[in-house]
Length: 103
Image (cartoon, rainbow, N blue to C red):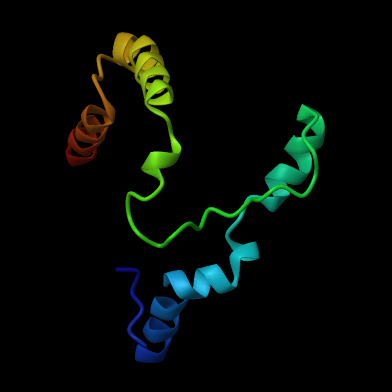
């Protein structure tokens, strides 16, 4: 989709987009630069985990967010995106963006 036709480049890109490669090179896929600036400003201790890589399975991060937090997120969405833009949920946002792109 980006015009790459070279099989060697496609093979390398596919390999480097895989979970095993990303897990082995986690420092290239984390938020260490953001945390280095944010943590001291927020009074947080240095050296906390910054990896975005979990188990490599889709949906495995959901249990990390409690039901009460899901409720807080839903209310915040309703108060902002819902009220201001008439978007009931994230799917509504994606649908609106798709329609706008098709125009």
